[in-house]
Length: 496
Image (cartoon, rainbow, N blue to C red; front, side, top):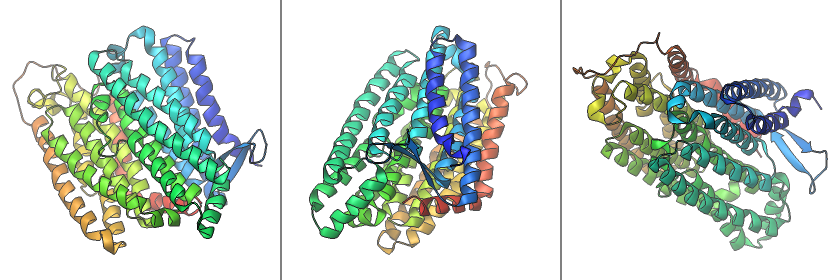
């Protein structure tokens, strides 16, 4: 075994260990440790990506070197390594962009607690990406839920506590359904390792036995993870959770946490059940309908908002709808579009949340649109960054969002039965996106006479550098998308 094949295990354990160590560190050392861990894990993920691209195959890593069914396994391939690397990049930029703001949002005595939660969140996301064991996935789903809930409520005002409670209630409902589904799957197959379950499920389908329990199991797992990823109509917790948490928390929650659950669902569809069986079960037809509904209703809710943070949060409901629409198309092309949109949306939404805080800082701290008039002139970097993010969400060429919508439209053509509703909703959503995002861009670039202070890039160098890096990442995804699409296609081909 090559030494690099240990990197997935090292990444998960290092993140968890950093969380433990941060509990006894003061604010600054905890901050530096967290930054170092993200950089180290990102570097290991990049090396692992190069290794898997070279070999062209995925590999399994036995925990403790005990074989199935007693042992636990990690499985890594091109797609897993790429997602781990990308998650590290987004998490690092989100933290850097909101670092100065964190001083005013969280008590200084609780900063080490904040970084404990970030480290645990990173470890759980990595585990969801790499694990080849369903029960281990469930354990880290719960760690992810607790960490995310802590990141919401650590700001300690009335709205964040309320948001955290609503988030916890909905997340526990989703976790409960997921656990019941895993228990039923274990009862049907006698296995928890994904590859072993796949063989047993294939035998069950071939023999024609237990078809209804298997269908119920697939439904429970799908609905559980749909609730946790805020698919419409299970999104009621999302606007407050994203809208009132710290800026870094909002960027990370919207960009990574919900995507980790979606990625786990894709793994289960391909690696545990088998995508052909998923298509025959018709579960994806339900996900397709809810995805379409989420795109429309999420956009309409965003249009009605008068709060920039909540507007961006409601936009996430629509973007999650896009991902489930692609999954619901039931084709490999649709799945490629959904995975690419996980990446594109993460890069864009975190950019928008961090840019929005720069605009509100020069508007008296107000998030109301009327007070944001002319904010782009008072903070030029934030204004340009928000504009780039908005153009990407609308689907303007050159930016990441355009490639996502192009891939979804292309995928829709390959499914004649769902082509018309998918293309119609894509067209309508583009118009709706333009209404609320371009309305905001026009507002922040409308000249206004105010006494609000101006901020230059020299005053906020770290913030400005973060915004520039976010914009570069977005443009790279928009103009250099083909290698990424090819990587996703190669990763999905080895997923099973």
